[in-house]
Length: 165
Image (cartoon, rainbow, N blue to C red; front, side, top):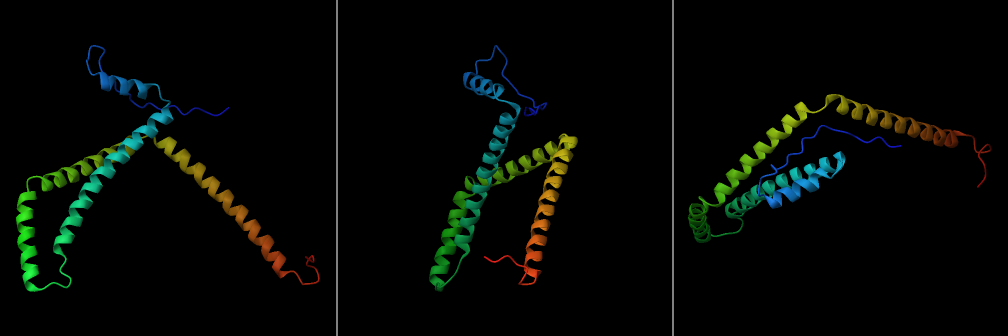
């Protein structure tokens, strides 16, 4: 029978008197999940948050690089694009820049939270998983060595001892 992994994951829920119907339904569905399923859903949520923030930062960088490229342009075109870049930067300063700063701060917050999760996580479980993976890899390595030795022996046999095919 497969062992069921149990963790002490906190599962926040709204107070019974709260009127947060959407939150309550979401929380109830999370409570019904097994521990592994719950942790997978939390991991997916972290991945979505990180992807959204990184995408926002990448879009900002692509815009900056696009405005900064010179290529085969004459002086008039360069001056025109410089003016456009300045005016666009001023108009974007309050909206896009704020979003990029917020995205960067959010990523820093996510990184900090993940560091805390790693530091406060169950070290024994991590060590057991690491040892299990190490044993599996060592077994695979030994099997590969045996196969290589057999192939090498077959290749080094004199031709009269080789089975004819």
